[in-house]
Image (cartoon, rainbow, N blue to C red; front, side, top):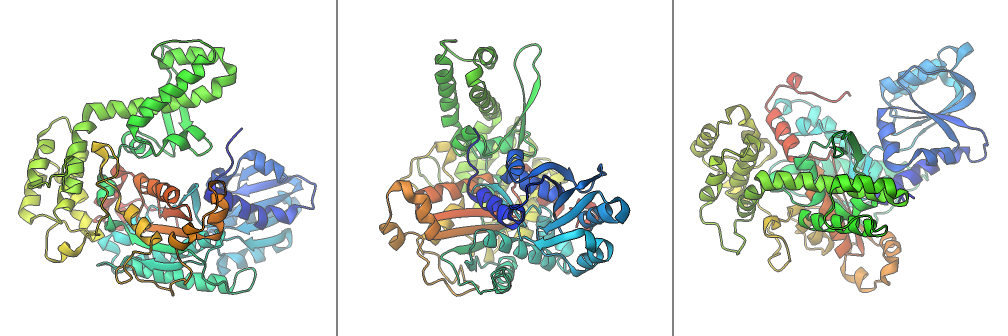
Length: 594
């Protein structure tokens, strides 16, 4: 049996049930459901076809495609308020004598502009029995992670080519409205604050969110103004912690998405043997083993999965000694009861072995250099006196590709708060990365010092001392966002550096008084519902190492749940390509459809 839907996904599904499916509770007839690309992904993240069947939906169709008419059935349209989706709706009822469905029940994910609403009224008003806006304009990517699904926001927010246009303000407004739908889904009206910095992006977005929250809760479906809840929403600009975006991570999820060609959360692998077939596995929270392993260090994963496999195989005394994937394939044929369990273990063992293969061939040598540069100290805690001496062996090593060398150069630049123009030019020339030099130079558009200056010295966040924490030598770096989460929960963020857009909720106390009155461990979930929630939003993409921090901090501070989100999830290679594109004109950069 699949695990229960978790966290954010559960909130979204419950909202969909109450806003959409509860309208049909008294009806016994089957219905057709029409989705566009956005709502198809939304539903796939928070429910299964069996859930839709339980709500009386027998067929799910794409609103963009030509479909066979079913004139005796009602149709539920869960769509985004875009021209393309609305045209698909109108096309189904434009011809009154041959409408595709008996009637339309229309649910928009977000605010529908008057122009589109009037177009619907003029074309097929009589066929529409209900039209609602349900305000879910984000993806619940994981139980504590959300995205706004706008990766091109990175270019719109940071490209100097759009600096004097209205595009940046427009995309910030869209982001603000989407963040409000997240808050509404969680039934939160948080205190909004941001990290002040050289750019006004975070402050602008924070003010837009605060204004949109006010407007939403003045006009919500209950027609009453909602007071500020016990939660905080913190908005951070991507340049705040550049190190975590380029460092090689050795925790399972972050490492796999960095080193392996995983697309759309799908991992492809081959079964062993002469007739080995290519198979696909989706990395998702329905897989309990993935949830258990994703935030563990690769060293622990490599140790734990074979143990689990041995446990499963020992139940049939089918194999002894070291297990290979081919032996397991044979084992699965003889063990139908354990086939599903073992197939998941085989997938994760395959991912782990792929990661270790890359690690042993190249990454292991890089990691020590990266950690020393990122922290400014070596594994013994001794201060790095000459960062260039640490960097040079990586640049001279012919087995490292240019992408890894660029990442190392960036860590060197971040560690020294910028370098000289002459030094940068020499580095680029000697490593022969002239064609990709914008992957380095363009970080200045994220307000990260590339060329050193006096102003750059003020840039860094004061880190927590983690020297007493147990860790692997090649994984000593902790993302800055974890410090921010912990400081926010403990009420240690300086209000000068982290100003509120709204009045601080007087009851905010992420740990202290609340945790002192904690109930037994079994009721943590219930307690969290009545205590604080910390929502962190990063403009310009969030890394898997940063999403991991949300789970770790939530586990450590049981009175406060941390939810983290961004415009999109990023991986180091994709980010470097995005940074390189910032200096290109708009017509040379792929942009998502409006």
